[in-house]
Length: 327
Image 1 (tube, rainbow, N blue to C red):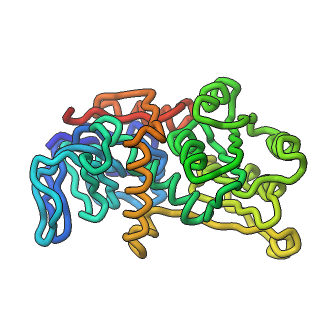
Image 2: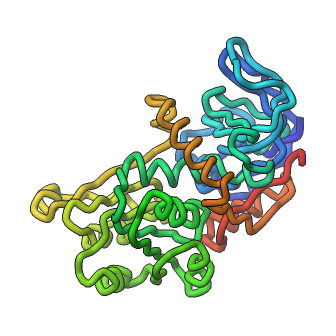
């Protein structure tokens, strides 16, 4: 099969077109003929070695859509030829065929999504929903601040927060152009990240927000604690800026009624796969109903995966990009 793989960590240039044997589904797994694969920051981290060194030719890609090619032993509820979306726990989406655990494969007939949208949806929607409803325990009337508001997760998070009852949703971005883009997705206000804390306090009349969604890290994460309302939660789900980890004192968390939480879909898929499936189905159905829109702003051929990752890693992207694999 055709694939884009890497066998050493490094920049986008280590991604190369290769020919590899098609994988075979084991017990409880589904083999998917890939139509579209999403491009995500987690795949950049994979290439950079954050998930460990590659062992031989390694294919990344954490979400995909396509058709069921074969079912492993014990898999029920799906049929060969059925159109599906999948979260790929071990990667593999940057290829003509990929294997996914059956619990993370979702029939498009059940969700109402088309193949192209579904290829960009499973990871970002599940993550956004999981951060809000799982880690964040969002409640009706809460106010939400989303960092990286113009990205794939950020644009979905604003819409999902509204659907889950948020009273106000704010965002931060790195440029004015990204602020204009993010405003399309239901944000009350979008602020430049530099100096956002003062802007949030002004927008909330000094109260602060109930939830902060942070995939950025570093100084942005530290400043987020200063804009929390009583019992407000800073929810970490990434480290896009690649800053050194913070060392946080505990006493200010107690004295200021603050909460720090995290969401990592990889860990959750291993320890509570039922929760991941619930989050995914809830979010995908909202997208299928039209309540949440996935904005695909770029589509690349599979062999252009290095350029797609370069743009994402440089922070030049808005919305979501997909690779056209077998569509």
